[in-house]
Structures are given as C-alpha cells and as structure tokens.
Image 1 (cartoon, rainbow, N blue to C red):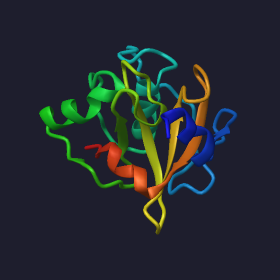
Image 2: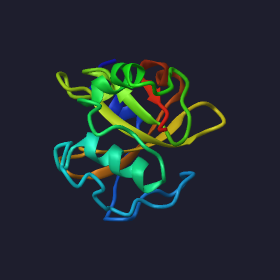
Image 3: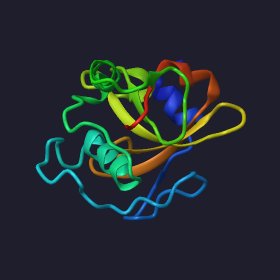
Image 4: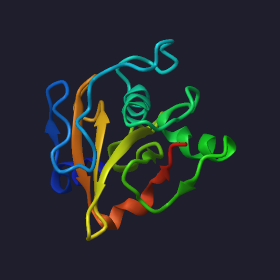
Length: 152
C-alpha cells in the first residue's frame, strides 16, 4: 500500500475553521495566533503551526528546528526528549514521504490525543492544502514510523 492509499483509506481528516480544533483532543482549541513574531518558520507551513500550537499551550520549542523531517535530530541536538512512543502534547516528526509527508521536507504535526488502542489524533497544517489546518487519526500500527518531540 502506498502512502497515498494509506491517506485515503485509513485516515480520518477534517478541515476546520479558525479556532475550531480539536474535538476529541486533550487540549483547548487552537486559537490561530502567530507566536512566531519574527517568522522564523515560513508562514502557513506545518513548522510554524506546530510552533504556534505548542506555544499556545505553554510549551516551548526552538524557533530553529528546521524542516518537519529535521525536528527529531534537531531536538536531540538541542536537548529535547525525543521518543518513538507517542504522547499527547508532543510534536510528531515525519521523515520525507512517510504517510503522505512531503518527499523532500518531511512534515511535523501536533499530537492532540493518544487513544487506548495506541492510535493518535494529530492536528497539522498543509496536509489538506496550503494553510489549511486539519486533523487525522493515525492507526497504532503506523505510529512507530514517526518521532515524538516533547516541548520544554
């Protein structure tokens, strides 16, 4: 099965209006505020969204974590806890091409909830189109494919 097949068959995805995320998550809805005042991350990209989501919830990630695929290695280098075990409130880094991630830059999203069966609810930007915030559920058998970075 290709990544595109996986996306169309196994993921639950919804587009949301501003501030309308996330039903079923462990956290307050996204407030759509840009905390990255210097635009260290490209506006409208997954990296800026995850930075903003973590900051909104009182966590901290560096303004220079790189592309989505870089967050795990950069996180380790900068002293963040990086794990292969999903945890609500973490950034989740996708390597290039994994589960629909960009084939060059990879992807980063935010873990909103971990279900009892091990599947995860993530919120993300650009999976449904540039600047679009959406959610999807990733089945437990695929969560090992990504790395999870705990904010400081």
